[in-house]
Image (cartoon, rainbow, N blue to C red; front, side, top):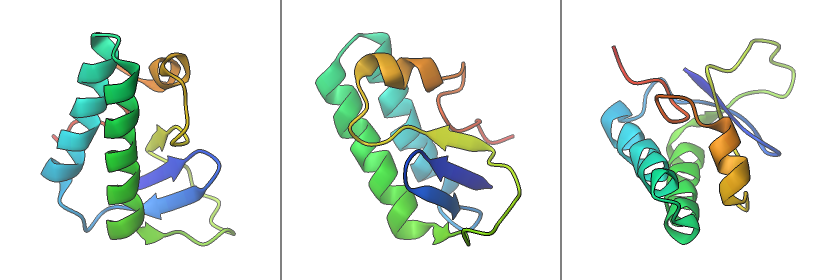
Amino acid sequence: MIIRIMGEGQYDVADVDQNLMQKYDNQVEDAVNVGNEEAARNALHALHDYVVTNGKAVSNDYLGSSEAVIPFVDATLQEITELLTGEGFIPDPA
């Protein structure tokens, strides 16, 4: 799975712990659902750090699409909300 982090690039997260990544994604969604901007940003930072640390950066000349988009880490609650789907940022594993 390729994830795009807005303003940073794309990361291949096929070999990361999908359950842990989904946990961080769910934390962002839960915080947004209750309108807690601080908790949403903290969870977004954790998700961002996990993807960047454990994923593999994709070459800048890669032309394929991303399966998920994560906002930049300083996104507002409104910006985070606009990118959320019914499954958070990252589709739930099948």
